[in-house]
Image 1: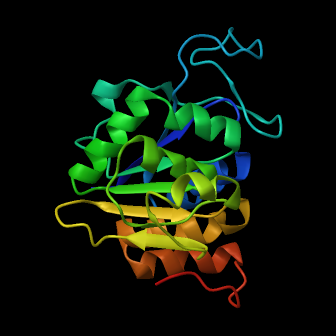
Image 2: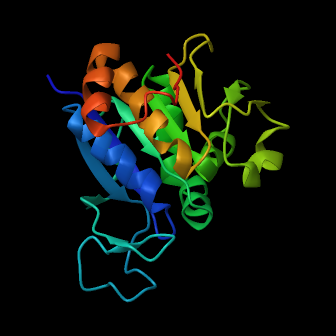
Length: 209
């Protein structure tokens, strides 16, 4: 059966971090669903659509697949949960009670949770245990006192006993390595290489194996 990933989104989400993750996972045959965490109409006037259009950090509008429904979004339905950044969007996602609950459920359920850029704030607000993480430097001071903070482009934390795998990354520029690592964890390194090569990702740029 195909792997499945749930990708959260909100007004202010960083476009590249959302679309690169979604696009790359789909190329690997992973079924992706995007869910708008914000309920009701968008403050940007997109109330005529259902779910509401999300207006991302640079003004690009994205129509999510659905509005987040926690009872239908748990780790029993998806293999991975992905939280993109963008400071305004990340704040909305990390402060969402529903998103915090999902993060804990996926980690406790042994699944994969990916967070990129300021999206790593959700690791803190969800109360995840001390472990290695990274993020955009703009939120480093919020995370460093709580976690083992690293400057690597992608950090994989899978050593917390009885928990799932947390994958964190730094920002738009590391979105491809972040996505490749998610594919590798979900589908294996061969599939990650298969997806990466025709995308013409520069072979001189490493990503963690």
